Image 1: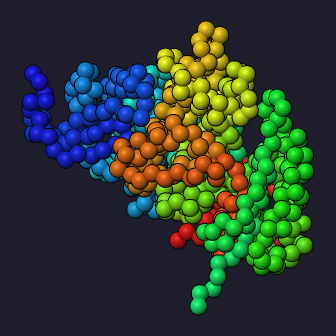
Image 2: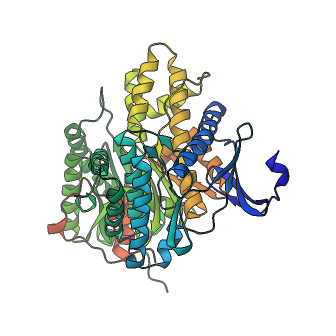
Image 3: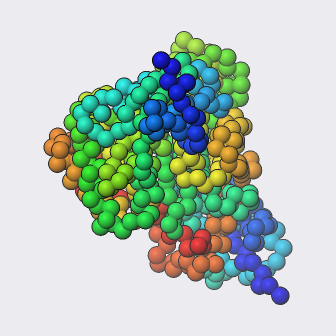
Length: 220
Length: 330
């Protein structure tokens, strides 16, 4: 079966590293994610990265789904053409959602996101690009994780710490109430993953390696 | 009749460059600078500060001799209050306070990173861009959101310019290594494998320097330089593309000392193309640290009433880009 033949190519969304086509597969909406070559990098680097990310994304998403983390279902992969076929999820990106909701309405969402990441990390799954742009909020404020291209399977505390530091950094970049929301996130995270204490300690260590960390931004 | 734009004296001195400039509105009236090149090794903060202390009187004298009007026409004294090397910042602040007291004009405390952004916003058509700020001391992806310049991504250890200089020293290239590596890279042919580290929109370079150092023994310098540039610039490009894609800002501005690298310019131009965005870069002669950018940023501070009393003018070596309240953008 060639799934491409069953597709109706639809509206195009362009991301940073892929073009997303909307289509249908046996009446269900799907997303076709095509990683295009980038002219601005050396073809060897480009091929290496695109192939690596395609495989990681497929592998990591499948592992995440198996343990009950909400991610789009992987329906097909075409390695030669750098294409993933995914279940299409309806929802709003967390970044946009944060614009429209006050802090107290956001807190329950951040608690749920924390639980999802806790579940992910307790199974040694790393998202790798955990920004507020890669969390999709579906109906009934249910968070799903997308874009696993930088993901990997690892039990290293450093990798887990990078995940939550990335999340905190992008949060801090756009949201004045970032500290409150991040502590709600941590509550959810530590609730399902008590060893996450170490992740948090490591995160603070990584943060202290960076340049010019203001006292007010340090987490205690 | 419109009120004429304020005339600002800008003093830059955060690391190895002493810069003094006078601007009015968008017009650069005078610009003088002098940069410290260590005889060997990198920049020692104390030696750089001593250098600044020697250079500032000469530069200021030159500027004041060439002023096309009387010194009391100057409306404000802007200086780089941070971030940077402590001894250098203190030297510059001392000079700025002295000039401010002598002329009895308000002191304006400028954030050095914000000044690089404001330079680009003043002399290029970029208005609300994603800024890729690349220099010897800083590497950040910056954009304006909710009243501040937010850092969307940045180096988690050393700056790209610092990485290039460090690698350059390992290969016995003169300081600063960046321009020499750029030249060597043009002769490179074989792409040697290096790690590719990107975390969201942030990155780190020190591990890549270590990996590149190990290649020096068995490969030509030009291949090492070529590979190091290809890898590190690909990372900067990818992070920039992510920032453009996530925020939909529609334009990118390349600024800072490493913005003078022609290969990086081409790469970022391509990134802008990929995201249907416009591309701007600061001119080569103003890419590195200079007094002009401090004066441009100082103009905004003066116009929004952010005057710095002398008793509160202590330097801020670790002053972050996102701590500055940007009152001049609605």
